[in-house]
Length: 206
Image 1 (spheres, rainbow, N blue to C red):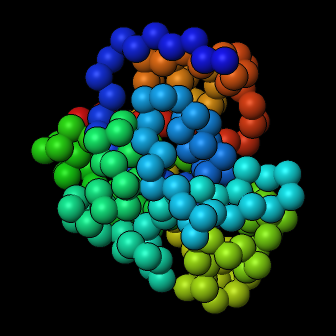
Image 2: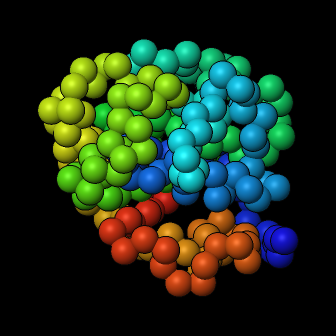
Image 3: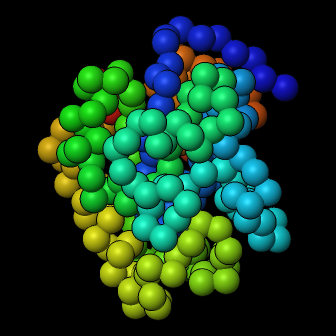
């Protein structure tokens, strides 16, 4: 059961990125459980389930995907059956390489950016445990092999941290207090204290 208290206007879009294995999809799904978030991008074709893991739900943008990681808002909105149904979490690993462009865009649109950081090797290990190249959605073929995956994870994390440093962002644990402070939403299903010791999050608002 949710207890909600909205104290700020949420954006139309939350540009969301983290490396493969950072558990960013699970974090996105926690946020999407709140009524203020838009889940009309979910279809059977955009679903991956793996044992007890949260899996993947909804549209992912990027290389080799249904939608490229391009800052075309009309194209982005097409991923949602009802673009006006709440805040869209626009997920792409590739945003890590385009954060400066995303940052320029959100200054004109009023959208936000959310970054998830988890160290390289533990992220690669978790991605492998969750299915690795057997994951059917999103498409990881562009990463080629496990060496290529680690190389991409390292490059994406480096880009995320560089952007965070450039903008002097504050990294925090993902917990109930952080969600309340950042989004103005209280959600009792999120633990009061940090969930993952090796995962940090931050949001940048225009």
